[in-house]
Amino acid sequence: MMNLSNDVVIDGFHGALITPADARYDQARRVWNGAVDRRPRLIARCTGTADVTAAVRYARAHNLLVAVRGGGHSVAGHAVCDDGIVIDLSAMTGTRVDPTTSTIHVQGGCLNADLDRESQAFGLATTGGIVSHTGVGGLTLGGGIGHLMRRFGLTIDNLISADVVTADGQVVLASNDENEDLFWGLRGGGGNFGIVTSFELGLHPLGPEILGGLVAWEMDDAPDVLALLREVAAAAPDELGITGNLRLAPAVPAVPSELHGRPIVAVVVCYAGPVDEGERVVADVRRFGKPVLDMVGSKPYVIHQQMFDAAAQHGNHYHWRSHRLPPLGDDLIERIVEHAAAITSPLSTVPIFTLGGAVGRVDEAATAFSGRDASHDINIAASWLPDDPDPGRHVEWVREFFAALEPFSRGVYVNFASDDDPADRVRLGAYGPEKWRRLTALKAKYDPDNVLRGNANIPPTHPKPRGGQR
Ligand SMILES: Cc1cc2nc3c(=O)[nH]c(=O)nc-3n(C[C@H](O)[C@H](O)[C@H](O)COP(=O)(O)OP(=O)(O)OC[C@H]3O[C@@H](n4cnc5c(N)ncnc54)[C@H](O)[C@@H]3O)c2cc1C
Image (cartoon, rainbow, N blue to C red):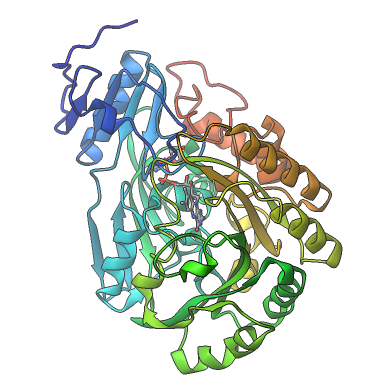
């Protein structure tokens, strides 16, 4: 093993180089999932594209395993590796909105919060994730689902171009006009084809006030509430983002203390249109049955986007498995409720995202992202404190819940795939055989040596002999 002292040098690199000898090392190798504990040889914290190219060339020259860090929220911990180099984009958080074209450039290490805040400064927005501390990088490259997707499409449907550092350290632009094959693969293929140092995204007028929040009922009402979710999702206008969630009510200030720890089912709404129109659209949800909590109201979009931040804390331990689902039939609802009711931790959640609207109107072949016709993504998301004496019970709950839904599964959203999924799950579950062939051929063109493999990996079909032309 190479012995790196604190004064390692990479030609042309201007950022911070953090080795195990550095006081910043333990903080710098930490990712969102506290269960991930990897020890890279070197963390190269980049300041821009030039640093990324220098780091890639260094990694290749020294034959180092590579991990790329965006927001650090991959549950499997793909942002770090043991004994290799982390190409860390977390300091690259620059943004620039152009209000004349309604576009934003966000650097590869931006978080959702950066995207939302800067866009909203101009009264604009685009689809991002539902937790503001998630990275734009990984989220976008996998597809990007969120409250606004039924109105504005997935995050990738708003991607106009990307600045990419390829696995051989070249800088290329990917768009519909340039390197279109790469642009196709970036939109759903994850970090397999290059390191994106800047994303150009289309924006839309929104807010700043939107109608959003959640309504919750006792878990006993879950069969009826999930049937309501089914009915509303089938008929709702695109403006309505709607997500189910089953969990124990969290002990956070926004939730009355008498509810803390009680099993609940919630419906989360976000209306991407005029507030008064939203009030009318969600009225039936709010009137349904006997809610124990109604937090729906008019609020700034950026505040709505932070609603789940506190419930998704850095450093807790996480284990997720996920399915794409068809419309919620009664038998599927029954299984979801049975297993949600057996939840083992007050920190675990079971969000049920509703697709449809603009997501389903993009041609399935247009991007690497697959499964646009699915109705829902369910995420069985276990979480527990680092000192939990029996973490195995939470993992087992996920395993049993996941298995019970398998007969209904329509595959998996690659950003919710787990390292526990068999390799086939990415190939067949996330992409299907036809796209898989196209993706592996693309990988052979852009990363024939599979340098970028710290991800839901797409291996190259026909590795190119070293030194060959692309
Ligand atoms: C709390 C939480 C909430 C979430 N909510 C949503 C949601 O609402 N919608 C949704 O779609 N997903 C959601 N996700 C899933 C999320 O999209 C993935 O975890 C995603 O990988 C996170 O990206 P990141 O940049 O933060 O992660 P990282 O761990 O830094 O990166 C994830 C993967 O992407 C690669 N990568 C990251 N940035 C780049 C880049 N710039 N160029 C090339 N490769 C890169 C990494 O190498 C790694 O393989 C959520 C995840 C968490 C933990």
